[in-house]
Amino acid sequence: MNKSQIKKLVTLLGFLLFSSQVLATESTFGFDDDEEEQAVKQERANPDPMQQMLNGLIAELPAKQIVNLPLAEEKTFLALQINALSAKAKGQVLMLPGDREHPNWPLGIAPLRQVLPEYGWTTLAIALPIYNNTGLPPRTLGTEPLLSYASLKKNNNVAPKKADTNAEAAFLETDEDEDEGKEGAAKEVIDPNLALNEYRVLIEARVKAALQHLGNQGKQVLILQGESVYWLQPWLEAGNLSKKSPLILLYVETPAGASSASFAELIKKLGKRPILDIYAGQNSLQTLWAAERKAAYLRAGNSLAAQMAIKVPVSTGDGTDSRWLTQRVEGWLRGL
View 1 (cartoon, helix red, strand yellow):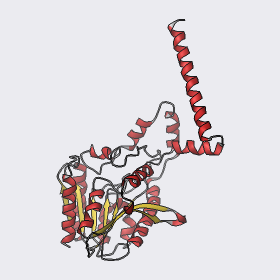
View 2 (cartoon, rainbow, N blue to C red):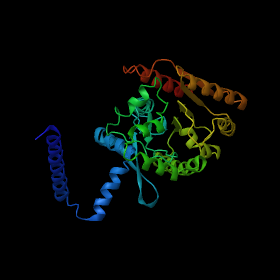
View 3 (cartoon, rainbow, N blue to C red):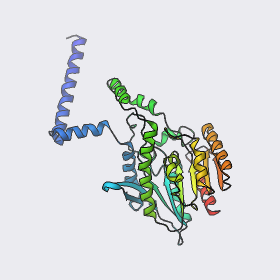
View 4 (cartoon, helix red, strand yellow):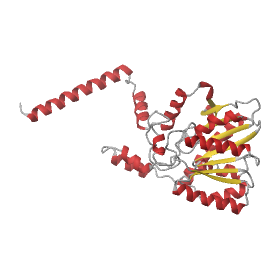
């Protein structure tokens, strides 16, 4: 028997062994039902990365922090709450993470929601669905909520910048499904403006549920990270946030379908209210966008708006950036 024949024989044996294992697995888990088998295949083909991260949070965080808030049609969504740790609470802080970030995102959201209760604030960070207006399937992530996906942003020098969706989708695509993926993407071209408006409705429903849950005891503060200010732009322009409520912006990003120029119009309608705008000073794009927002504050005559640039690298891993952030935010709130 020559080498070629031996190679073919080994390949055949390997295939037979693999086939027997697959049949045994299907028999063990009872995949005789065609509908059940189809459901399993669909779940594998369309994973929900956000749900994977949220499941990881539920497993690792104290149960007393986990809150399920109601939505329409008997649906719920996850929120993380820590009550004020002082005898006299100052108020509530509602936090929205950026796109593809969970409510305990280590850069920005997590340190604030964990530390502000020590100064008398009840914090509530809510989970948001992933914004997908590209026609491509959601990116596939691992189950580790604080490590696997956090590295995508940490390695970019600043927290807010998103990884390139098209590049990552191409990396995950195999030779066999390349043509199928391209056809699927072509069939699912989505109007960015339409996708943005539909998504905003989903976010507004969650914010409404969160505010009802918090009630109206003390001052209310809204912290918007990443794209969140654009998710809530129509809601804010309609005057749904109390005029006395401070607004904190963290690492503002502009999502597809929105215009950074529209921020100026939003600032006009918000009126003269306390706004703390924190951006990553070591990132050129963040600095450019911050300059545009500063000009909008000045044109609107809002002397209560303040900007701060975080100077330390957010990838140090020693907590320096988190301490800087919590100290500045708490000090600003205390001075109001």
